[in-house]
Figure 1 (cartoon, rainbow, N blue to C red):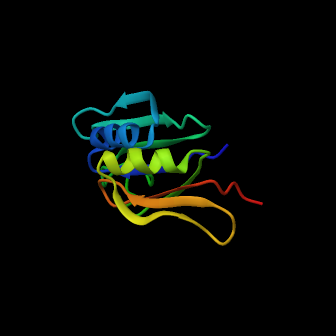
Figure 2 (cartoon, rainbow, N blue to C red):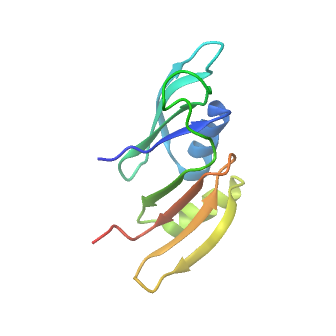
Length: 126
């Protein structure tokens, strides 16, 4: 199983957005104290897998210094139409609307609150 890890300037807002827009389920949030609002969080995707995230700090270890808003994540789903409706209703910025591809997938791409790209589609790889 693969768990992408993302940094956010406002990790609490990101958690709220990811649960509202995409249906992720919050399973763990570790308080990072005054300097780092969220040290570590885990969100599960209902169809399998999940993401880890935290608050960017600019200091600390290599992970904490990664830039925010520069990630691209692909998530396989059996329900792209319902998920597209949910994501746009929650305020996700549409980058690529819901479409059928020439390689047999149906999906879309949206931008989250801090600029990361999230693609959802029926393609599950070869």
